Image (cartoon, rainbow, N blue to C red; front, side, top):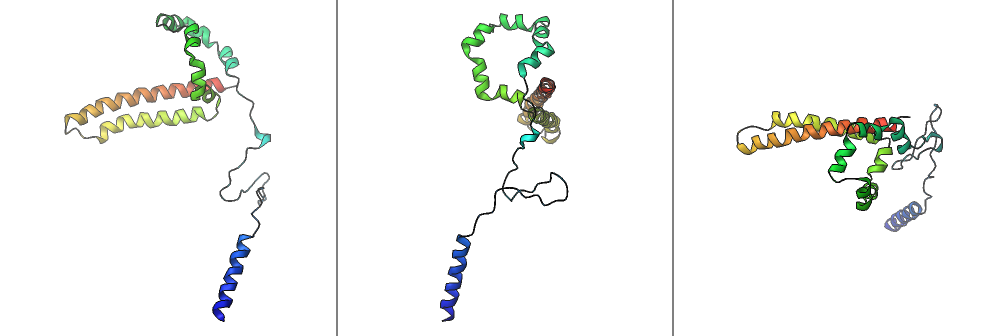
Length: 173
């Protein structure tokens, strides 16, 4: 008799657990601080419509910085044209649409891009010298590895640092 009562009790518990209402999806403010919101576990905070930054106008910023004039004075445009890269060839190759497909143009307007590039550059700039320090020089392939990794990391880290600075300047208001 007790086994039947225990099984019916556990059946009722399972049934009541299955029919419980889900937790409300709206966040509850439980702090005395203003605008302090606690979200249920596993739920991501939603972006507030009140805290939106104005969109970054990339071409307007390029115009404000006079980047094309500076590129022309530096001889970059004629060097690119001598290399076979003109505006018409960029259009024919579809490079701008390919850059947008890869997310390059939208990354330039993302506020997190300069920080991500800076983190990448610092990691690469630390990896180069640490490769020389950590990799022993017992075999020729280890020396070759040092000679390959170190300059590559230093050049890529410097480029990422410059790109971080460039994108940061593009995003300034």
